[in-house]
Length: 254
Image (cartoon, helix red, strand yellow):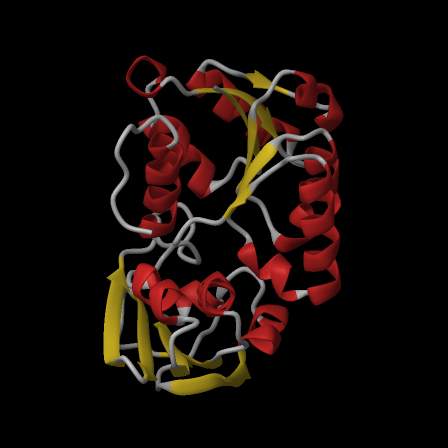
């Protein structure tokens, strides 16, 4: 399977360093980024090709992996899907725009393409999906991040946001993809609280789900990527596992 990557930052670097074609039948072959030098550096490291013209790689890929931004998804995903090429999208917040979501859903269906959304920086998504249509009544997300990861310089805990996921991803498009992921998994605009906390050095996501099935709570305490504190290591790892799963004979979980 030939893969092309959009966005050659921290997540793409982790993925490219962990995928071995001989083991997984996956070759990350093309690298595209608005910063050409960044694409060239990663392509050299991974033994791939940096492309200046994004459309050029679409004739030789089976899947495109987006690791850039919601804006990149909105600009480039329609082109990929119109070619009947599958996608893995990391910037899931783009799909909280209901108009765009409907647009790409229709394009994908018309061209027999599929969009895969990794679990990203959280655990427990399988449980949320399982109960989404079986009496789920309430889902909340409380995220704590360090001032550094949010570009803040404060010495006391502060609530930065409290509201719906759709608004959270607009105000923090590069920091709160997890809110979009959970919302899409349970088909509702979940309640979100974002706290900047100088006492934490990890990205902490606490999910609570309640309903007729009972109640469950998960807490994920992620180490941020050294190259980009806005990104959790687990987000990159989840994409690696998803890529490898395409070649598995037996899959576990949802």
